[in-house]
Length: 619
Image (cartoon, rainbow, N blue to C red; front, side):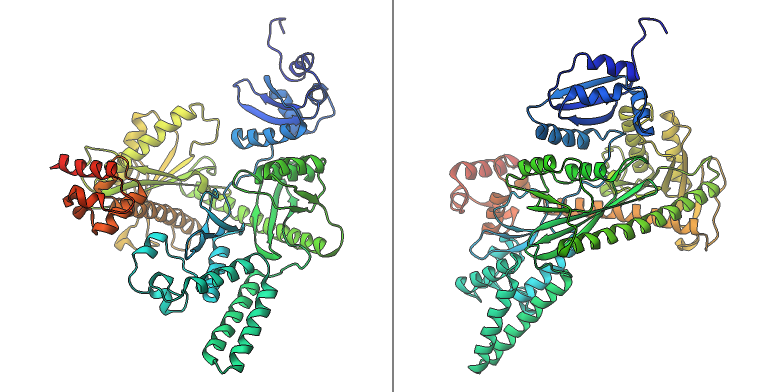
């Protein structure tokens, strides 16, 4: 090797160490193409990075990472806590190959009781931007919906929007089936409704025992006074409260608020179960499968998981119970406390009720990982069968399925779903609004060509060397010979000639089970009706169809609700609602005089003049 050859691996890292000091901070290791391989934190950068300069004593994963390192980047921080927070932010942003990565970054839903004279109770997901009281998180939308249904039966709180509430003139169906007290039309006083809201928030805050006892006392008093209808209503309320608690399952007595986090690792895979305990009640659990390597230990996995799991949209609770001890529990507790703006405690219980909670979560993690590994094995067999059926060189690692949806050419959309060895990859689904101005309505061939052209143009721009795993090994098209020919032409134009493409057509009588498959330049063929590979292809096609129809319906609903008022500068959702409620329709707004527009509550003279001028300019 000549003297001017660039340094790599151990030699490169040793050279960096000469210029580092003992500050805390974050380091990044990059390969020859400047792709981030690993992000790490350090209390002392010089000491930490010096460990990588040693030529031996590393695990196989770390040795491979060092050998691929062609450059490094460093950021110093004031404290190790700041370094930990920065490290986790960079990991989530850059997704380095050698870090433990949390695949699922969705937010969890809450229950919101909003601020209003007659508050609404509803499901809320995302940033807590709306004013009101929040209760959660719940593990899933299903858990929230079940709880809301029971709470509506108990407390008869409205779930309609404020706009619907303001515009109602008679009770809705929910009042008829005893799910709402109809405050919209004055069938309950503000004071009585406020009492119901207070009872609901007390229950969601964990004060269910006192609430039920108070209801029993009221029921007995009503019965003694021979007010049997009221006594029966209170009885039904007590039963519904009991039903909520039954659905929630185990409710720990000595743990008012905690996340119970348990890890199980096996065969190079990991499952983390998280149970949400709030207000002394179990509000469900969720499972997560972080990406790990074969030589990573449990403390490293849990530390990476906690750092990535709790973010701007996921506030940590006051107590986190873990199945395994962290290497630096105090550091993680400080980082989460700083993120939450209050004290967060991390513990690994050894006995008592908290240990039983961990044991239950660990059992769920073990069983969930076993199911996932079994499903993965079945998925691998299906992919191998798919390769055999379509004469592929190897089982596909990434399958992209495309479909279109429209009604006589209107609100046309394209949809792409993605599947692989881990099943459906929903985070990588894509929607395409059909933009072609020269397409005739209902031109399915032209729509499919546009979607595939845009898809490959994006791939060529973002991953021209096909190194990020975003290029498909197999493309499935919902359609027959025409669609296949159209897509084949696009792929040829763009120089993509090494990706298998198959069209899936319904076949004779459009009967499921009689699908025909089309390859460019080949004769159509079919699979046996009882072939598992055929069922697998049907699932892929049906998922693409579901996603396409859902996307189309959402676009159509948005276009149906659109009015010319959307184009008026200064008229947002609130002012649009005020105008439509006052005049009844956008057409009536367009015909209204300037004085009438100024008389609308919430519409200033300036906005009234803008609306008036907008519609006069249109004529």
